[in-house]
Image 1 (cartoon, helix red, strand yellow):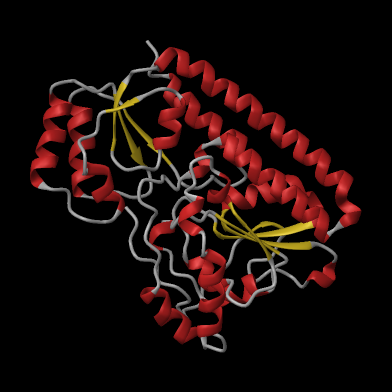
Image 2: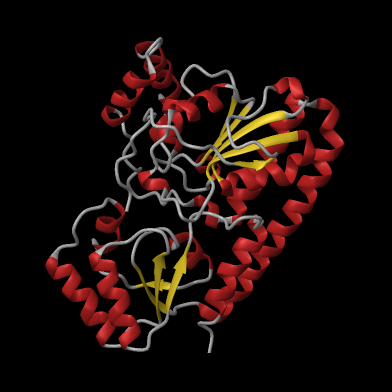
Length: 332
């Protein structure tokens, strides 16, 4: 699923603003607001919900029509990130173009994946050391040179770790806590506002966790086919049994062809009516996933699609509840 991310292409591209009304780089902090850059509107929505009108939030990837895995960051994106007070990224190999964009920036950085309970922190023991070496190595580079090195240093996903942490509300609650802490440090006068807004968000997150737990009691053990890892955390939270043949989802995630024998096994699994649903990514796919989805539809098996991004004006809580509602339909 994850194709190599090209970084800092010089072609002009708009940078959408989630909070505020600019369609270019965020305004100078002289306007009195804290400037926040998020890699996607999932994290942008969290910052906007907590920061309110005390922040200006720019989400580099802001539409479900865009594919984060093939997103080409621009020189304008780099300018926006370099002018930020706070940068929020997913991490875990998902949006590694952000590391290139924030090279040399003094902004506070929140990496959501590092808040996940299963994040392999030991693997990153020397992450800061390597980051410093990387910054020194590429100091003073032009945007063109950064673009070249982006391909050279494209980060692989962490083996065994599902980086789609936004589908884990408990992880998101930690991210919200860090956003609140950082915004308060950047704008102490907004402390009370940030705390009040964060309380509303965390209340929603706790309620969503409860909804997932309730659904777990109804769906535990239900067999499903997951075409790629995107909905994996959500599926696990409600107790679904992933019966996808080994190697299928990982091949799709990496943009590789699924082995013919694995595809045949997948199609036979569908035709034998051994799955209750197929869970897929609404934004990406390929010929193999299309064949599985088509086979499921022909067999009368529901195909549920999940997005990596929020719809315009959709809150994180609304987005999660929509996904939960889709899963709840599997309970008979």
